[in-house]
Image 1: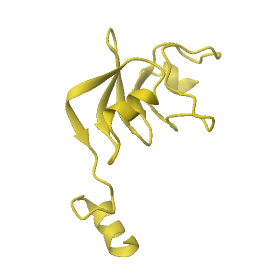
Image 2 (image 1 turned 30 degrees about the vertical axis):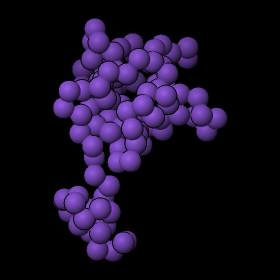
Image 3 (image 1 turned 90 degrees about the horizontal axis):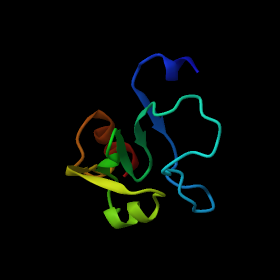
Image 4 (image 1 turned 135 degrees about the vertical axis):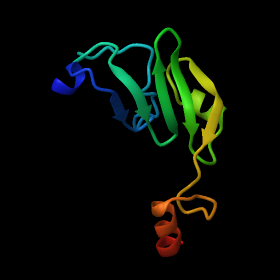
Length: 109
């Protein structure tokens, strides 16, 4: 793919686990690859993860109501937790800020 070879930052958005419950974030891939070592960030329903060369997968944001232990159990490789891990507020919570959160709170709560 052109995106993988372009030198741009590659962000993958995906479900954290398969419907069967098997982890999708793994230490290596057994499927054919478009590019090796090109993913910079993974975003799932459980959090946001940076791929750090020499370190591995580092969780930088966690979804509301989810524990680090639950995320690790759903992840198929070692998970490092950022020292400044951020818990992302649910968009419908009044404590969340920003235009989308404000709109959601007004129209869907």
